[in-house]
Length: 64
Image 1 (cartoon, rainbow, N blue to C red):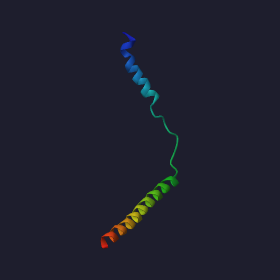
Image 2 (image 1 turned 180 degrees about the vertical axis):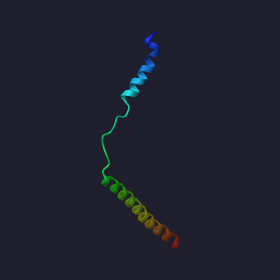
Image 3 (image 1 turned 90 degrees about the vertical axis):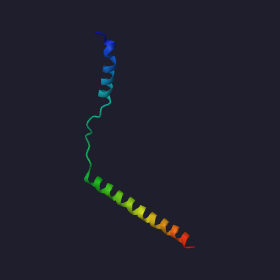
Image 4 (image 1 turned 45 degrees about the vertical axis):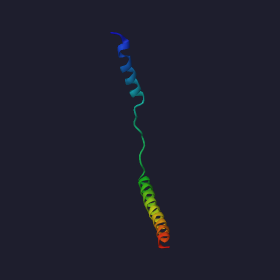
């Protein structure tokens, strides 16, 4: 058999083998979860305050 017949298959297999994801020897610290929760709470509170301020400005324009 000719090697050129299997060349595309061998190339694809080598590329997938080379670029595959290996194990990441890392962990998430318990404090990381707390920080993520604090960021989400901050985003929701900030969005609520921004919505309240803009809602008051819009309401004042229609009151005039």
